[in-house]
Length: 81
Image 1 (cartoon, rainbow, N blue to C red):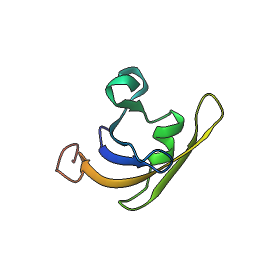
Image 2 (image 1 turned 30 degrees about the vertical axis):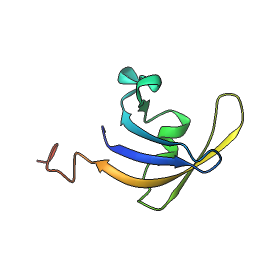
Image 3 (image 1 turned 45 degrees about the horizontal axis):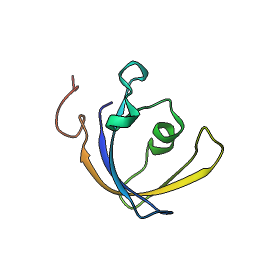
Image 4 (image 1 turned 90 degrees about the vertical axis):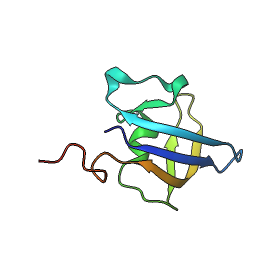
């Protein structure tokens, strides 16, 4: 949890930083998306260069390329035993 990614929307070209979080901490307007949301679930397990795909609540399909993984707790030594 709390991995941060930089995405580029393939439809609009807009770039956005998102942080995956627990549902209780989600604040989409601030870039915190629940891991259980369509976009959050669509990002799980992907790597830089991958394309995330999800359906919005309105029913439209979205696609975004992962440009960078800005922070990953496990890779930085956080949350390890």
